[in-house]
Amino acid sequence: MVGKVRIIQTTLLLVLILIGLKVAEVHAQAAPASVVAELSQASVTFGDSVSLTVTARNMDAGIDLSPLEALFNVTGRSSSREVNIINGVETVLVNWVIQIEPKQTGVLTVPPIKVGNFSTQPLALNVSGPPTGANRVLFIEVSADTENPYVQSQVLLTIKVWQSIKVLESSKVNLGSDLFQTVALERDKEYIATRDGKEFLVQEQQFALFPQASGVHTFGPIELRAKIPVNNSRTQGFFTPSRSVKRLSQPITLNVKPRPDTVDGQWWLPAQDVQIEDSWSTDPANFSANDTITRTIEITAVGVSGDQLPDIELPEIDGLKLYADNIDRSSVATDQGIVSTQKVTWAVVPERNGEVVVPPITLGWFNTEDGSSEVAELPAQTVVIKDVIEQAAPLVATAPVTDAIGDDNDEANDALVDPVSSSLPQDEGFSKWVWLALGALGVCIFQAIGYGIWALRSKREGDKLKDPAQGTDAVRVPSLQNVSNAANKHQLSDFQSAVLQWAHEFWPQSPPNNLLSVAKRLQEPKLIKVFTEVDAALYGTSDESVYLLEVDKLMRSSARQIVDAGKADVAVSKLPVL
Image 1 (tube, helix red, strand yellow):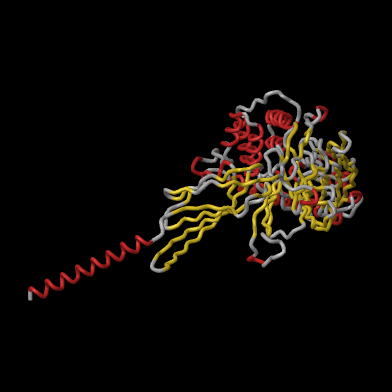
Image 2 (image 1 turned 180 degrees about the vertical axis):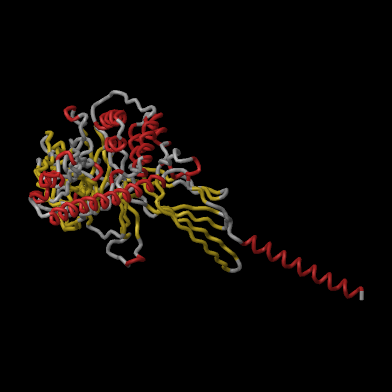
């Protein structure tokens, strides 16, 4: 028994030895580890990409592409792995295909790429300048309708992409800038045109630029990134082999002029044209208290973004009560660029009969076409009101005549006690005065109920903003921390953005779109002065420093007064229910 066990053990040992020898033999026959690199082409045009293929043999390690960053942009990469066994010899190949784009022209060296402990050999790449003239198959052009705009005025930017080859995919970058507000007009065009004796498909886009600071500024260059077929004569739809290319436009230099000194302290509205119109729901010459009357005022400005239009504020009118009902702002793209409209509707309540003069409304603006200050105006109007039930004079009861007059003067006594009966029958006169008194009393009660409901609703809206945990005096208003931070750092642009963001939170239904509107709604003269100085410093020629400390405290105090009064959104106060 023992002998059989030893024989089995010896046999197993021999098998293990044979297996080990075979494995050693296979490893001895396996190819040695190595890394090689090659380029898809030895020369390339600046803006085009080239494929760099790195192949690692019998290695299990990552690749380091950081050496490429100095001279090349890596625009894409892919990898694959394959295992081959031939005559018992196993070979593992890992391929990386990297799309690289030269950052400059000249003879560039593709540096060694490291995979594990091995590195590729350096490679030479000849990069020539971008093609010109008839040699171009894809290029981009940018133009502006003016090179000397005023700050915050519109500049029409036109971008044209010319292509004589099939473009599989494209995108544009560098359209945004902190110095320019950019708005796409979405009026794209596509047409055929000839350039340098060649026919091109031209894709045209327009943008409206609004420079936010005066001075000499450069916009662009605009960068076009596209994928085109490796072989333009052989396209296979989705599976077409492609390569990445980049084309750059020429930059646009703008000499942005500041706001003229002559308009400092006024609302800055640079435009090509501004019109102001109004309409009444009822003929102004025939107002009746029984009608529902509204007045709509509409501002239309050419070459202006919607947030540049000022709020329309109406003065108090003796004889009419006005309630702002709703504000509608819109912008459309036209051949002249952006045309913005602001439409405001007021509910009108007549308060007395007769003629009422509605004062004129003026809006100053700056004509960017000829560099002059102009005024758009709604002239004064006269409206005629009727059917307003005015409060009747109180009736005075006459005391009965005493007996001192004498019984012989009964007729005189009757006349003194009831003077109306001298001209009207007693029953008819009594009925007239009773009905007039009851009617006046009913109207007063009806109006009192309506105003009571309106006041109750306003109070409830104000209570929603109060913190019950801290009592009725603790008013919850939006945080002013961002305003305080920007004020402390004296960053005027950030300060303006923070104030407008706060205003959007405080008046969410109808937010003001400029600093002066915020100050006027807060009804604080000091804020109006400070915000006017900030506006002049941002867009004018003023170099004076603006004192911003404690502005947040003034805003908080004014906001609390508004909330306590139940007018958290004063711009959208509704007509009381009648």
